[in-house]
Amino acid sequence: MSQGTIRELYLELRDKLRQSGIYTADVEAREFIKHAVEVADIDIIVRSDTPIGQAKRNEIDSWLARRLKGEPISRIFGEREFWGLPFKVTPDVLDPRPDTETIIEAALKRFLGDPPETILDMGTGTGCIIISLLTEWPKARGVAVDVCDKALAVANENAKRNGTDKRLKLGKSNWGESIKGKFDLIVSNPPYITNQEWENLDVSVKNFDPILALKGGEDGLDCYRTIVTETKKLLKPDGAAFFEVGFSQADDVVRLVEDSGLCCKGVHADIAGIPRVVEISFGEK
Image 1 (cartoon, rainbow, N blue to C red):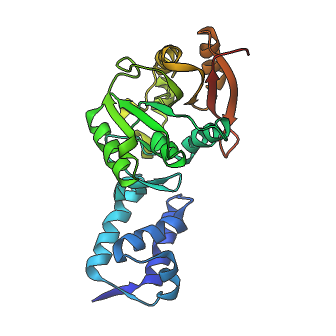
Image 2 (image 1 turned 45 degrees about the vertical axis):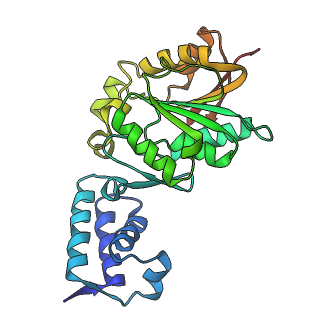
């Protein structure tokens, strides 16, 4: 029994998502159809008259109900694209955001023409940052740590999926406390949500991302105090570190960095113009 055509369903999904205030409604409507019917974007146009069966319609309706309750589409399908690569997402890891790609852009600019040999990712989660960097630098090797065993399992699967597992060593560590050696490049996207911000956090984040990957204490800086200290021990003299920071936190993190004796080489804005990544090194200011 047919439950309408691809085009009819697309228009219905798009309208319901829009009415719910989802600004990416057209994109998400296509994603629902592509996952259910296993078609490409172009097929939604050229095969728009293809009928949708009852079973597929029921599946899509169940996904839509979850989405309208605030669950991100990446959680529904268990996958998120980051830096053009596919990453598995589970309830145990932070959902990768486009803002975090600012770290990749800044690191590529810093090491342009002279790629790092060794990279450390503290609090790796899905592994999206270090895996993306390793795909850009085929001769680099990485170490990624996390305090959560389940997160490390997800990162391991993502490394295999993206062909970087042979060059990436994963290990359990509370930030850098169990790490030995020094690195050309250190990256991290630590928890930075303040206790006050937590109360007003969007449901799509508060109810679906792990608290461990979000809350940064009363002022949101608890984790930075630790990783700045660890970075001073683990960064090579001519190396660089890049930390993601929350909205309006850049100045505070810069102050922590400079109080430690390290140097802030700059702050990189994300696509919206918000200061998003602090660049750190040794040397003269």
